[in-house]
Amino acid sequence: MDTCSFCQKLRNEVIAMVAGPGDLRICDACIRDATRAIIGETPSLFQSSSASPGSPECCNFYLKKRKKVWKLLTARGLFVCNKCIGLCNDLLAEEDEDWSGAPAAAVLEKLNKQHKISFF
Image (cartoon, rainbow, N blue to C red; front, top):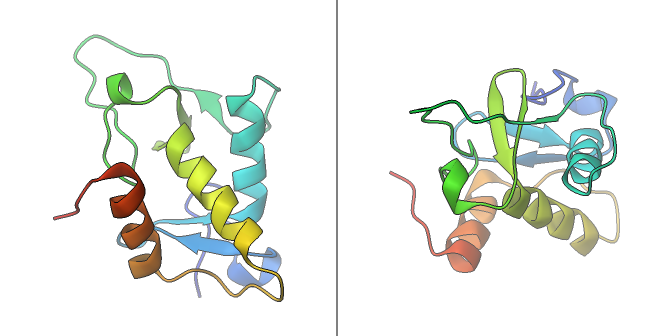
């Protein structure tokens, strides 16, 4: 069963789950929490990632390095940027009915279109 990579909740414990590359998953609760962190509210799980010299930190969803995004958040050793959280919010908003999760290919396709990136 799928689990959120950030909070470890199972798919049946959340309303929605967005699939990223590989086994990366983020649930609706973590998307809301990360959104609060981006706008400066105190989140329960996500923190702004503090840069350390020579740090290779990059968004686990689309591999942009810290200097290429406005905000990079961290939770449980994983990183997610403001652009990917925005995309996840868009995916959730597009669904009118019971949402069973976006397949990884759909997420990657939207990321590629919006951010002109590719995964290898």
